[in-house]
Amino acid sequence: MVTVAIAGGDFRFALEDRDWTGAARVRLDPHARLTVRPGRKGVWCYLAVAGHIAVSLALGSTATHIRSALGGLKGTALQAGDFLPISVPRVLEPPLAVFMAPWSERLGNVIRVVLGPQDDYFAADQIAAFRNAPWTISTRSDRMAYQLEGPRLKHTKGFNIVSDGIALGAIQVPGEGYPLVLMADRQPTGGYPKIATVIGADLGKLAQLRPGAQRRFQARPSCRGRRGASRSGAAVRGPHRS
Image (cartoon, rainbow, N blue to C red; front, side, top):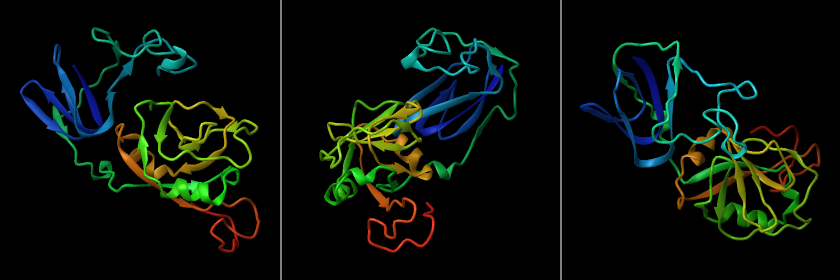
């Protein structure tokens, strides 16, 4: 027996003769079958085991990175029939506990961002297009990047920069002009201008959007040192805080 916790999008769960939606902690007896199916919304669901997944370490981690075929079970996604060995399993009571998780309700049609660090590679009308357009999540999106469909953004200073670090939620605009929001499996550095960065509080809202969903960006101005004014024209008197 082992206890697992499950949470994420609005998924539907079933175990033996019980079914429910929402985050839960559940005990799995030998030969039990826990079924997870898509619900009304959400892309990702997470399952945590009260114990350790006993697979070989890759770079000190048991995680799987599919693009580089590292970690987990042979560096690949789980397939039907795969067996994950669990060491030091723990059992917690009660057998089923469903949790109220109001924080998982990610309401609203706006994703908040901070402009920059390379928003100066785009003219004012392109910044306006980025802010005002409805952007659609592409079917080509994955854990590395969410690709956005909408107006094609044009660069004023070219689309190549000296490669620098990529923060979670950074929005790159490559040469074809369609933004990429860099997600959990993003590369460590990149050489395309980043027009904005999604704030941490809204990353989960974006991550759980299904392909075809539309959202707009609400942008705060960037601040680079002490140039005296932000893009909106307001005087800058100190460090910008998000």
